[in-house]
Image (tube, rainbow, N blue to C red; front, side, top):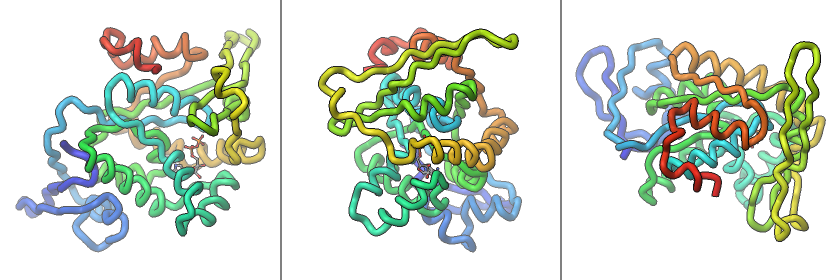
Length: 289
Ligand SMILES: Nc1ncnc2c1ncn2[C@@H]1O[C@H](COP(=O)(O)OP(=O)(O)O)[C@@H](O)[C@H]1O
Protein backbone atom coordinates (compact mmCIF):
# COMPACT_ATOMS: atom_id res chain seq x y z
CA UNK A 1 0.00 0.00 0.00
CA UNK A 2 1.43 3.36 -0.86
CA UNK A 3 0.12 6.62 0.45
CA UNK A 4 2.05 9.81 0.63
CA UNK A 5 3.05 9.40 4.22
CA UNK A 6 4.83 6.05 3.67
CA UNK A 7 8.54 5.47 3.35
CA UNK A 8 9.73 6.87 0.06
CA UNK A 9 12.99 6.06 -1.66
CA UNK A 10 14.82 8.70 -3.63
CA UNK A 11 17.70 8.11 -6.00
CA UNK A 12 19.90 11.19 -6.00
CA UNK A 13 22.51 11.79 -8.69
CA UNK A 14 25.20 9.89 -6.73
CA UNK A 15 23.21 6.82 -7.80
CA UNK A 16 23.18 5.15 -4.38
CA UNK A 17 19.77 4.69 -2.79
CA UNK A 18 18.74 6.77 0.17
CA UNK A 19 15.87 5.57 2.22
CA UNK A 20 14.05 8.61 3.48
CA UNK A 21 11.21 8.23 5.89
CA UNK A 22 9.24 11.41 5.62
CA UNK A 23 5.74 12.45 6.31
CA UNK A 24 4.17 14.71 3.77
CA UNK A 25 4.26 17.63 6.18
CA UNK A 26 7.94 17.28 6.93
CA UNK A 27 8.69 17.62 3.24
CA UNK A 28 7.49 21.19 3.53
CA UNK A 29 9.07 22.00 6.86
CA UNK A 30 12.65 20.84 6.39
CA UNK A 31 13.93 22.76 3.44
CA UNK A 32 17.55 21.65 3.87
CA UNK A 33 16.90 17.92 3.97
CA UNK A 34 17.21 15.56 1.05
CA UNK A 35 13.54 15.68 0.20
CA UNK A 36 11.49 15.86 -2.93
CA UNK A 37 10.90 19.55 -2.35
CA UNK A 38 14.56 20.43 -1.98
CA UNK A 39 15.63 18.29 -4.92
CA UNK A 40 13.00 19.91 -7.07
CA UNK A 41 14.05 23.35 -5.93
CA UNK A 42 17.63 22.57 -6.93
CA UNK A 43 16.50 21.09 -10.26
CA UNK A 44 18.20 17.80 -9.43
CA UNK A 45 16.95 14.64 -11.07
CA UNK A 46 14.59 12.77 -8.85
CA UNK A 47 13.50 9.23 -9.17
CA UNK A 48 10.81 8.04 -6.86
CA UNK A 49 10.25 4.38 -6.18
CA UNK A 50 6.89 3.54 -4.76
CA UNK A 51 5.66 0.36 -3.26
CA UNK A 52 3.01 -1.44 -5.26
CA UNK A 53 -0.47 -0.28 -4.41
CA UNK A 54 -2.65 -2.72 -6.32
CA UNK A 55 -5.37 -1.18 -8.38
CA UNK A 56 -6.10 1.88 -6.22
CA UNK A 57 -6.09 5.07 -8.22
CA UNK A 58 -4.34 8.28 -7.20
CA UNK A 59 -6.35 10.92 -9.02
CA UNK A 60 -6.72 14.68 -8.70
CA UNK A 61 -9.68 16.86 -9.62
CA UNK A 62 -9.02 20.42 -10.77
CA UNK A 63 -11.57 23.06 -11.67
CA UNK A 64 -13.08 26.39 -10.66
CA UNK A 65 -15.23 26.82 -7.57
CA UNK A 66 -18.75 25.60 -8.35
CA UNK A 67 -17.75 23.39 -11.27
CA UNK A 68 -18.81 20.18 -9.51
CA UNK A 69 -15.50 18.66 -8.37
CA UNK A 70 -17.07 17.40 -5.15
CA UNK A 71 -20.05 15.81 -6.92
CA UNK A 72 -18.03 13.86 -9.48
CA UNK A 73 -15.10 13.07 -7.17
CA UNK A 74 -17.52 11.59 -4.65
CA UNK A 75 -19.28 9.47 -7.29
CA UNK A 76 -15.98 8.16 -8.59
CA UNK A 77 -14.81 7.45 -5.06
CA UNK A 78 -17.90 5.24 -4.51
CA UNK A 79 -17.31 3.55 -7.83
CA UNK A 80 -13.61 2.86 -7.38
CA UNK A 81 -13.63 2.31 -3.60
CA UNK A 82 -10.97 4.88 -2.83
CA UNK A 83 -11.38 7.79 -0.41
CA UNK A 84 -12.54 11.16 -1.69
CA UNK A 85 -10.39 13.71 0.10
CA UNK A 86 -11.53 17.32 -0.29
CA UNK A 87 -9.17 19.84 1.29
CA UNK A 88 -12.07 22.33 1.53
CA UNK A 89 -13.84 19.80 3.80
CA UNK A 90 -10.69 19.43 5.91
CA UNK A 91 -10.54 23.21 6.28
CA UNK A 92 -14.24 23.37 7.24
CA UNK A 93 -13.79 20.56 9.81
CA UNK A 94 -10.93 22.50 11.36
CA UNK A 95 -13.07 25.66 11.33
CA UNK A 96 -15.89 23.98 13.19
CA UNK A 97 -13.51 22.62 15.83
CA UNK A 98 -12.19 24.67 18.69
CA UNK A 99 -8.63 24.01 17.54
CA UNK A 100 -5.99 26.76 17.57
CA UNK A 101 -6.24 27.33 13.81
CA UNK A 102 -9.98 27.91 13.69
CA UNK A 103 -10.18 31.71 14.01
CA UNK A 104 -7.17 32.28 11.74
CA UNK A 105 -8.75 30.06 9.07
CA UNK A 106 -12.17 31.70 9.34
CA UNK A 107 -10.76 35.08 8.28
CA UNK A 108 -8.92 33.61 5.30
CA UNK A 109 -11.78 31.42 4.03
CA UNK A 110 -14.44 34.11 4.46
CA UNK A 111 -12.40 36.47 2.31
CA UNK A 112 -12.10 33.82 -0.40
CA UNK A 113 -8.31 33.63 -0.01
CA UNK A 114 -6.15 30.52 -0.01
CA UNK A 115 -4.93 29.01 3.22
CA UNK A 116 -1.11 28.78 3.41
CA UNK A 117 0.54 25.78 1.77
CA UNK A 118 1.93 24.73 5.14
CA UNK A 119 -1.43 24.65 6.90
CA UNK A 120 -3.15 22.83 4.05
CA UNK A 121 -0.40 20.23 3.81
CA UNK A 122 -0.57 19.65 7.55
CA UNK A 123 -4.32 19.06 7.33
CA UNK A 124 -3.91 16.79 4.32
CA UNK A 125 -1.08 14.75 5.82
CA UNK A 126 -3.10 14.25 9.01
CA UNK A 127 -6.01 12.98 6.91
CA UNK A 128 -3.77 10.66 4.89
CA UNK A 129 -2.14 9.26 8.01
CA UNK A 130 -5.52 8.59 9.61
CA UNK A 131 -6.64 6.85 6.40
CA UNK A 132 -3.48 4.81 6.26
CA UNK A 133 -4.06 3.64 9.84
CA UNK A 134 -7.51 2.41 8.72
CA UNK A 135 -6.00 0.56 5.76
CA UNK A 136 -7.07 2.99 3.03
CA UNK A 137 -5.19 2.98 -0.22
CA UNK A 138 -5.39 5.32 -3.20
CA UNK A 139 -7.34 8.59 -3.20
CA UNK A 140 -9.24 11.09 -5.26
CA UNK A 141 -8.07 14.54 -4.24
CA UNK A 142 -10.46 17.45 -4.66
CA UNK A 143 -9.22 21.00 -4.13
CA UNK A 144 -5.54 20.03 -3.88
CA UNK A 145 -3.14 21.02 -5.36
CA UNK A 146 -4.22 24.61 -5.85
CA UNK A 147 -0.83 26.26 -6.28
CA UNK A 148 2.25 25.32 -8.28
CA UNK A 149 4.15 24.82 -5.03
CA UNK A 150 1.52 22.36 -3.77
CA UNK A 151 1.68 20.52 -7.12
CA UNK A 152 5.49 20.32 -6.96
CA UNK A 153 5.38 18.94 -3.43
CA UNK A 154 2.74 16.37 -4.34
CA UNK A 155 4.65 15.35 -7.46
CA UNK A 156 7.76 14.98 -5.32
CA UNK A 157 6.23 12.57 -2.83
CA UNK A 158 4.01 10.35 -4.92
CA UNK A 159 2.91 9.54 -8.43
CA UNK A 160 -0.41 10.98 -9.50
CA UNK A 161 -1.93 8.79 -12.22
CA UNK A 162 -4.44 11.20 -13.65
CA UNK A 163 -5.67 14.77 -13.26
CA UNK A 164 -9.21 15.49 -14.35
CA UNK A 165 -9.76 19.13 -15.20
CA UNK A 166 -13.48 19.85 -15.01
CA UNK A 167 -14.72 22.79 -17.00
CA UNK A 168 -18.06 24.52 -17.06
CA UNK A 169 -19.29 27.57 -18.92
CA UNK A 170 -18.49 30.69 -16.96
CA UNK A 171 -22.10 31.92 -16.97
CA UNK A 172 -23.04 28.87 -14.88
CA UNK A 173 -20.26 28.94 -12.27
CA UNK A 174 -21.43 31.84 -10.11
CA UNK A 175 -25.04 30.63 -10.09
CA UNK A 176 -23.91 27.11 -9.16
CA UNK A 177 -21.91 28.41 -6.18
CA UNK A 178 -24.73 30.65 -4.98
CA UNK A 179 -27.20 27.76 -5.30
CA UNK A 180 -25.17 25.34 -3.14
CA UNK A 181 -26.87 24.07 0.01
CA UNK A 182 -25.73 21.58 2.62
CA UNK A 183 -27.93 19.58 4.98
CA UNK A 184 -26.84 20.59 8.47
CA UNK A 185 -27.78 17.16 9.78
CA UNK A 186 -26.53 14.58 7.26
CA UNK A 187 -24.00 16.75 5.38
CA UNK A 188 -25.65 15.99 2.00
CA UNK A 189 -24.82 18.44 -0.82
CA UNK A 190 -27.59 19.96 -2.93
CA UNK A 191 -28.03 22.77 -5.40
CA UNK A 192 -31.14 24.88 -5.80
CA UNK A 193 -29.89 26.73 -8.91
CA UNK A 194 -31.66 26.01 -12.16
CA UNK A 195 -29.26 26.83 -14.98
CA UNK A 196 -31.00 27.45 -18.27
CA UNK A 197 -28.72 29.12 -20.81
CA UNK A 198 -30.43 29.76 -24.13
CA UNK A 199 -28.79 29.30 -27.55
CA UNK A 200 -27.15 32.46 -28.76
CA UNK A 201 -24.10 33.97 -30.49
CA UNK A 202 -23.24 30.60 -31.99
CA UNK A 203 -23.09 28.78 -28.64
CA UNK A 204 -25.59 26.08 -27.81
CA UNK A 205 -27.94 26.33 -24.85
CA UNK A 206 -27.33 24.39 -21.65
CA UNK A 207 -29.72 23.15 -19.01
CA UNK A 208 -28.75 21.96 -15.52
CA UNK A 209 -31.61 20.94 -13.30
CA UNK A 210 -31.44 21.79 -9.60
CA UNK A 211 -30.28 18.99 -7.33
CA UNK A 212 -33.03 19.21 -4.72
CA UNK A 213 -32.86 17.67 -1.25
CA UNK A 214 -35.15 14.87 -0.11
CA UNK A 215 -38.03 16.06 2.14
CA UNK A 216 -36.24 15.11 5.40
CA UNK A 217 -33.32 17.45 4.57
CA UNK A 218 -35.34 20.32 3.09
CA UNK A 219 -35.84 22.22 6.35
CA UNK A 220 -32.23 21.77 7.46
CA UNK A 221 -30.39 23.37 4.57
CA UNK A 222 -27.57 25.81 5.20
CA UNK A 223 -25.37 27.87 2.89
CA UNK A 224 -21.58 27.97 3.22
CA UNK A 225 -20.43 31.30 4.66
CA UNK A 226 -18.03 31.75 1.70
CA UNK A 227 -20.74 31.21 -0.95
CA UNK A 228 -21.74 34.88 -1.17
CA UNK A 229 -21.48 36.75 -4.46
CA UNK A 230 -18.52 38.91 -3.39
CA UNK A 231 -16.54 35.99 -1.97
CA UNK A 232 -17.29 33.64 -4.89
CA UNK A 233 -16.08 36.29 -7.37
CA UNK A 234 -12.86 36.61 -5.35
CA UNK A 235 -12.43 32.81 -5.31
CA UNK A 236 -12.89 32.69 -9.08
CA UNK A 237 -10.30 35.46 -9.47
CA UNK A 238 -7.85 33.63 -7.23
CA UNK A 239 -8.48 30.37 -9.09
CA UNK A 240 -7.52 32.04 -12.37
CA UNK A 241 -4.40 33.58 -10.85
CA UNK A 242 -3.08 30.80 -8.59
CA UNK A 243 -4.68 27.53 -9.65
CA UNK A 244 -4.98 27.74 -13.42
CA UNK A 245 -1.16 27.41 -13.78
CA UNK A 246 -1.53 24.00 -12.06
CA UNK A 247 -3.46 22.82 -15.15
CA UNK A 248 -0.41 23.59 -17.30
CA UNK A 249 1.87 21.88 -14.75
CA UNK A 250 0.01 18.60 -15.33
CA UNK A 251 -0.60 19.19 -19.05
CA UNK A 252 3.11 19.25 -19.80
CA UNK A 253 3.53 16.05 -17.77
CA UNK A 254 0.90 14.34 -19.93
CA UNK A 255 -1.45 13.73 -16.99
CA UNK A 256 -4.26 16.17 -17.71
CA UNK A 257 -7.65 15.00 -18.93
CA UNK A 258 -9.80 17.99 -19.94
CA UNK A 259 -13.49 17.38 -19.42
CA UNK A 260 -16.07 19.99 -20.41
CA UNK A 261 -19.32 19.33 -18.57
CA UNK A 262 -22.08 19.14 -21.18
CA UNK A 263 -24.87 19.86 -18.65
CA UNK A 264 -26.16 18.45 -15.39
CA UNK A 265 -25.41 15.08 -13.81
CA UNK A 266 -27.65 12.97 -16.14
CA UNK A 267 -25.76 14.15 -19.25
CA UNK A 268 -22.31 14.56 -17.68
CA UNK A 269 -21.86 11.41 -15.58
CA UNK A 270 -22.11 8.84 -18.44
CA UNK A 271 -19.81 10.99 -20.60
CA UNK A 272 -17.27 11.28 -17.80
CA UNK A 273 -17.31 7.50 -17.31
CA UNK A 274 -16.75 7.10 -21.04
CA UNK A 275 -13.84 9.55 -21.01
CA UNK A 276 -12.31 7.56 -18.14
CA UNK A 277 -12.93 4.20 -19.84
CA UNK A 278 -15.15 3.21 -16.94
CA UNK A 279 -18.43 2.93 -18.79
CA UNK A 280 -18.47 -0.84 -18.35
CA UNK A 281 -17.61 -0.71 -14.67
CA UNK A 282 -19.91 -3.13 -12.87
CA UNK A 283 -20.58 -0.83 -9.91
CA UNK A 284 -21.47 2.26 -11.88
CA UNK A 285 -25.15 2.18 -10.96
CA UNK A 286 -24.43 2.25 -7.25
CA UNK A 287 -21.80 4.99 -7.50
CA UNK A 288 -24.21 7.81 -6.87
CA UNK A 289 -25.41 6.26 -3.62
N1 LIG B 1 -5.38 23.33 -1.56
C1 LIG B 1 -5.76 24.42 -0.90
N2 LIG B 1 -4.89 25.44 -0.70
C2 LIG B 1 -5.23 26.55 -0.02
N3 LIG B 1 -6.46 26.77 0.47
C3 LIG B 1 -7.39 25.80 0.31
C4 LIG B 1 -7.08 24.58 -0.39
N4 LIG B 1 -8.19 23.79 -0.39
C5 LIG B 1 -9.15 24.48 0.25
N5 LIG B 1 -8.67 25.69 0.67
C6 LIG B 1 -9.41 26.74 1.43
O1 LIG B 1 -10.73 26.26 1.68
C7 LIG B 1 -11.71 27.06 0.99
C8 LIG B 1 -12.84 26.19 0.51
O2 LIG B 1 -12.34 25.24 -0.41
P1 LIG B 1 -13.29 24.40 -1.39
O3 LIG B 1 -14.39 23.80 -0.61
O4 LIG B 1 -12.42 23.48 -2.16
O5 LIG B 1 -13.91 25.53 -2.28
P2 LIG B 1 -14.29 25.72 -3.81
O6 LIG B 1 -15.75 25.60 -3.84
O7 LIG B 1 -13.82 27.14 -4.01
O8 LIG B 1 -13.59 24.73 -4.70
C9 LIG B 1 -10.93 27.76 -0.09
O9 LIG B 1 -11.53 28.98 -0.52
C10 LIG B 1 -9.59 28.01 0.61
O10 LIG B 1 -9.67 29.08 1.52
